[in-house]
Length: 144
Image (cartoon, rainbow, N blue to C red; front, side, top):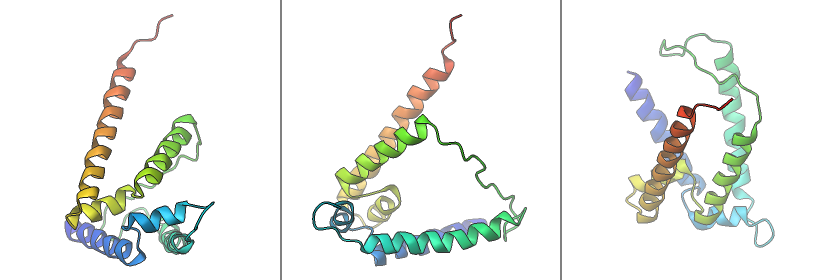
């Protein structure tokens, strides 16, 4: 049952991204070009998504189990630290270069779009490099 609802949520999300134009790198780059020919339409998509998700989050915060009977695992940290800021900046650079972010990239892969495939491969490589670096860093013993 959980797999079905995960599939359904992914399907609805993917269709929404396509309808909103978020899988079109030219439209995304137009949104990011605030000093040129700015296209504010994706701002409305984001505001709409945030509004709907906020309603869901308010409902979720009042529950201990999901509607499928699974334990609720909501984020609790409100800490803004250096890795969060640095990661956000790197994400923004990648988004600005490619005009693609992870969700729409997966939709592009599903549609057989070569640029999406290359993006996802590069994204996985970046996450793998981070994990290798972070794993190696956590194994180092601090010197006194």
